[in-house]
Image 1 (cartoon, rainbow, N blue to C red):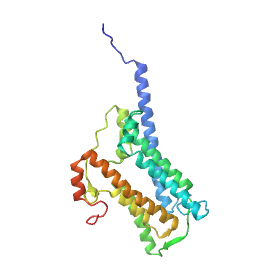
Image 2 (image 1 turned 90 degrees about the vertical axis):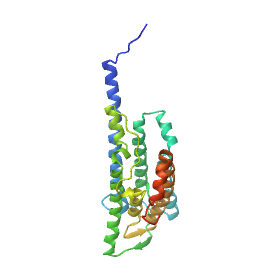
Image 3 (image 1 turned 60 degrees about the vertical axis):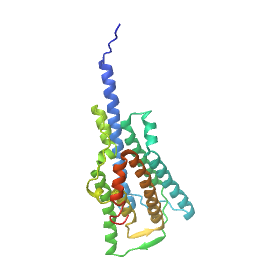
Image 4 (image 1 turned 180 degrees about the vertical axis):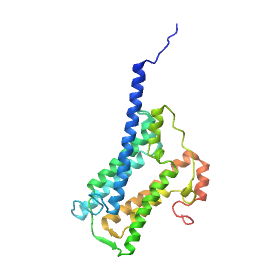
Length: 256
């Protein structure tokens, strides 16, 4: 006896609805990410946005220090923990792999939104640069953000932030496995995205104690992130990545 299963209209509609939900979720999460990225530029550069790194509710320096460190620690734990291969395998056991990258980016965005909202300024001045050099510091900050954004497009911006995966899932296609590529700036340094962040965080005409705290902790986290990321890349690409690491500097060509 044989049994033939037919895919009826109800099943097809259900599948389309599920894929549409994944696509809608992915697009919404990407828009939240991009809005968060733009807000981060204003938050650090102290331009346009209603709350910046040097504005908002104030309190004692000790209280501000504890709150700000807790906020940055929360982001670091989420950002590093969900990026590890063990979490990705665990996620795939409960939900579509197409949602993994998007969910990771969405939760990172929400962690940053919480940081922007609850950040406590510490406004003691560490340094203050007078014009015209102040304009150079502001330009340096924007150059850093442009390096970050440009570098993401070099290695597939929409795949990096999970949009390619949900579009492929909606179309019924499998996302191609990650390929090892070194386009553009990646031929000069291994981590141009991280370099862009460091430039953006430290280039400011007025450095307050709170801003320096943010820049120092995030820079330290970047070096930890590089170590974790390169460990995963060696697992994925083996000797191919080891040879790349031997030939190409980490952040500054010819130095390290």
